[in-house]
Length: 217
Image (cartoon, rainbow, N blue to C red; front, side, top):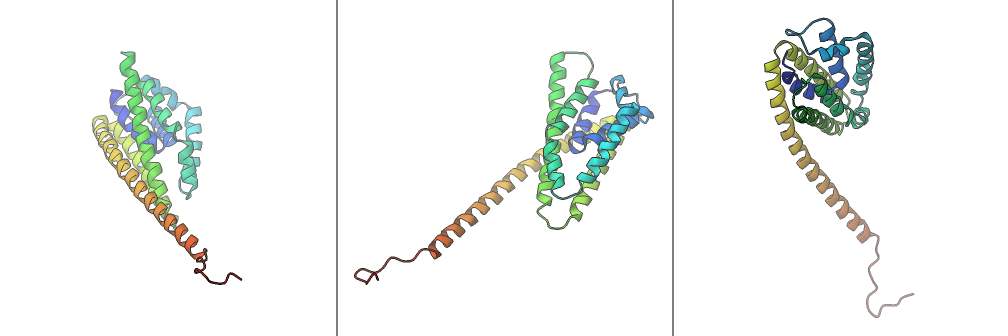
């Protein structure tokens, strides 16, 4: 299997759920699910200690990711962990060619994971403005199924998965641009509302000055 074809799918999947990505990749290595043999450097992910640890952390994230506001805290904690995991994954599978090229590809993989992570975190923050908790559960399930489906495709049809992942990254960048603009408009509107309210409260709480010549007792 060409390791370059794995970089984009792994970047997207890792940015959404690092532990599930490690678990699915390790299972694929352990039980030979890949249509083509994956790089030998991934064999460590198929070891039982790694599989058990990945399974435990996947269970923790499965629970935390479905509780409003706890999912936001979990995303904040993993802001560096997920991109770093993608970067290390890239460094482990890239062949020993030009170190400069490998470093650039690893950084791009980490950037792709950061884009995926930021899109997920931003969408979750937006969803948590809704008072009901069910949307979190639905979105989290869709994210998990997306990771599983993308990785399954990557190990069976790596070229197709790479193309889909690259298109997904472009769409996520566009989503982040829209999200930033939306947040600016929302915060700008909130500041204007609070400013008008403060002025109104100050006006109501201030007595008008006495008229000229009026008694001051």
